Length: 87
Image 1 (spheres, one colour):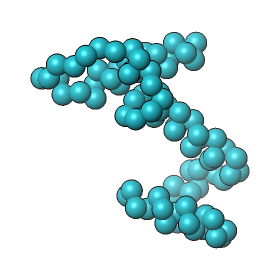
Image 2: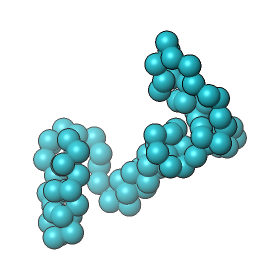
Image 3: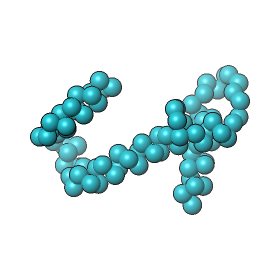
C-alpha cells in the first residue's frame, strides 16, 4: 500500500512540476529517484521531519500558536541558524 502511494505521488509530482506547455521525457527511473526534485525525495524528507517532531515530545499545535521555539542546546542553535538561511 505504501509503495503504491509513493508510486502515484511520484508520477503526479513529476507531471505537475513541469511547465504544461513544454515536452518532457517520461522516465520511471527519474520519477522514482530519491535524489533531487522528486516526490520520493520530498516524501522521505517529510517522513524524517515527522519523526523528528514525534521524538521531540512537543505539542506541535502549541508551538504553532506560540510563534517562538527555544533553542537550548548549542547544536540546536547551529542547526537553527543553518535552516534560517533557506527562509
